[in-house]
Length: 223
Ligand code: ATP
Image (tube, rainbow, N blue to C red; front, side, top):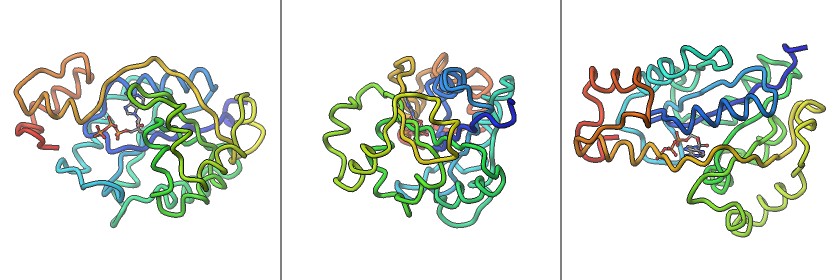
């Protein structure tokens, strides 16, 4: 029953969205049998300096990037919400929207290693499964060894190998998955564009067109 397939959630600043985000969504969508992957751009991310490019632009770039993929959805709730974009609030809302359907929070190893800085991080596991993906430059072995004790404990208690666990319960498991390793980051894309270099093939053409039309990332570190 496809309606009950887990919902993948990919949050980020998407400043701008790039090919590694899209591959990550596609590959996990297929290999984990997700019913959809929701891209949720952060409005005001609490953990980092606010992106200089407004939420409405980052949202529109996500919209353009995913438009032709029926597996992908864009979710504008964090850009619309006033105040900091807490994943806890987003998952609470999604839990009420989706009832008992499994939710899977998808994130790179870099994001997971900083999880204890997130608002009410321990409760995130009650709201969703967490799927951690390999990211070039962030070796998982080192990530695991460096986790703060409370997070390492939660991680080890919840770690499962079999993706079937994502369907058995609505939340609570941690899974690690490899996706095609793409050493692409939005930071480097912003730097390239700021120096007048092309970001073609790193972001979809429709996103590039939007960046050009709206004169985004013109200055070095204009993100
Ligand atoms: P920035 O360079 O501005 O920090 P970013 O490229 O890391 O941006 P985000 O929007 O911060 O992109 O990332 C959203 C999510 O996608 C995070 O969970 C992050 O770990 C993951 N992600 C981003 N790039 C990659 C990549 N190349 N490989 C695997 N995961 C990635």
